[in-house]
Length: 198
Image 1 (cartoon, rainbow, N blue to C red):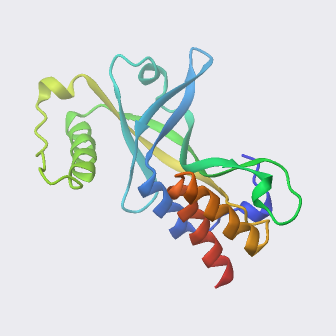
Image 2 (image 1 turned 180 degrees about the vertical axis):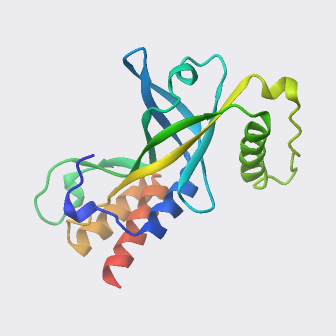
């Protein structure tokens, strides 16, 4: 993706923290020569070299994706920024955080690999609830799922969070976003603002 220098994020620890907290995205490949996208949650391997996920077996993307180069896109909070929020002249824009991950996809045919993926996903998101549901997937359920891994070859990360504006402009943007209920985006700008100051 096109990344102006103000918005380019290269810190690997920051990027993978973002991925862990915004792990629902799109996997894009080709199906019979045409671009195709599925919206799914992803897992990162412990060594940060792979992504894991799964498709419904009936998803046509699962039939053509083995050994393809794919792109995974993830995004965080985003929203419209009005030029009326600036002290100095500006133009309307959109603030956002996004990561693009490229890699080679490999289908995992073994049921044990599929079970590991769905168990890890369930455990990751169930732990947020008071009434924890213990994963219990049998072979009959798992045969309807196709697991995959992506060997990561490149990662691009952009935080477009008003870094090219003055500190006062950024504070004004944060205030207006909070007033309109976009607290996640306001928090992201505040964190980036504090990092710039420090």
